[in-house]
Length: 97
Image 1 (cartoon, rainbow, N blue to C red):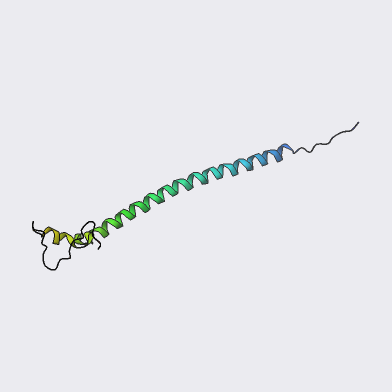
Image 2: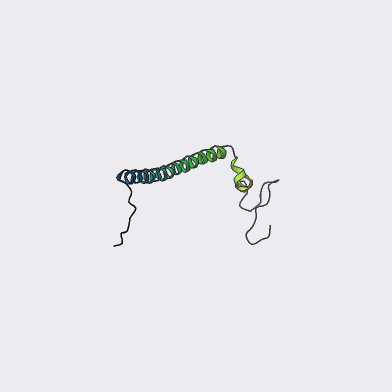
């Protein structure tokens, strides 16, 4: 009769292995959860800081710089289309600038 010897681990070895695997899986799940929570908080903080910075910078930019300085000149033009002296001519649609 031929007997097959099987290698079986002791109960102590199996329990230690299962416990180790359980600890590793739990740690990986916690690391993933913390990573995504931290990432979302970091992105929100960066977005808020960027909005604050842009808001402060916008307060320091004169309004005429947003439209190339034509705001005052166009506001002062009459119905005949003439502009104040010293103001650049406004670009016309369909005309090369």
